[in-house]
Length: 99
Image (cartoon, rainbow, N blue to C red; front, side, top):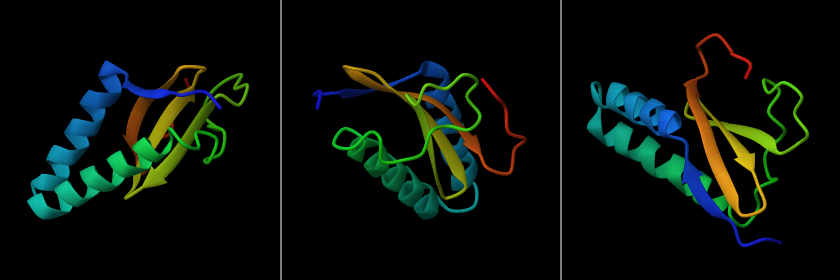
């Protein structure tokens, strides 16, 4: 097993921050809880990056593109040899987009 690090795509980080700010409009505590829980799941990917299924919205996915959902946020990521790259964060009620 490779010793991987987590790397965020700039757009994914902006999407994530926007989602957290939206949640904070109703409850700062809920926003913080969601932020912490998603970061914990992402950090756990280092130990087991194949834990979640292949991303069904990724065209020509060879199995290295995966995704999970938590608190109605869908996090898509790429598993490389040295890095796990967070690619996008989208609310599950939004129209799915392939990439």
